[in-house]
Length: 151
Image: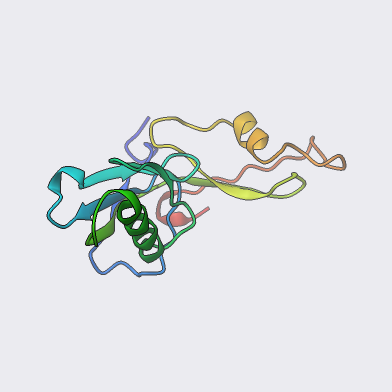
């Protein structure tokens, strides 16, 4: 395998990242709680979009903006653990690989591919509920992206 064919690693996010970014599986967030260094941590979102955070456990953040995630996490800590916490959630890195399953399948969608666990075609099809009854299973097309997002 050449360096060009190797899977991409998570991409660091610059400080000026657009605030409309939507969190997805395998993104890594940084939770920072003012004057609570022992609760501050990095967390990689699971395949289902959950982040595991100190004290509160698994929190569903997939599909949220960083601002929405900050509000949700602040509410969770404020409800049971901290008084008026000052919480910051930033994006440490994004998931580098995705695959889009579309066509004659039950639930077309984009799937995140874990950096350390390659996704095979059978697993990808199973995750979208398999083929529709009228699907032409003998005519499957697989397109891959090359460097710089060219097909």
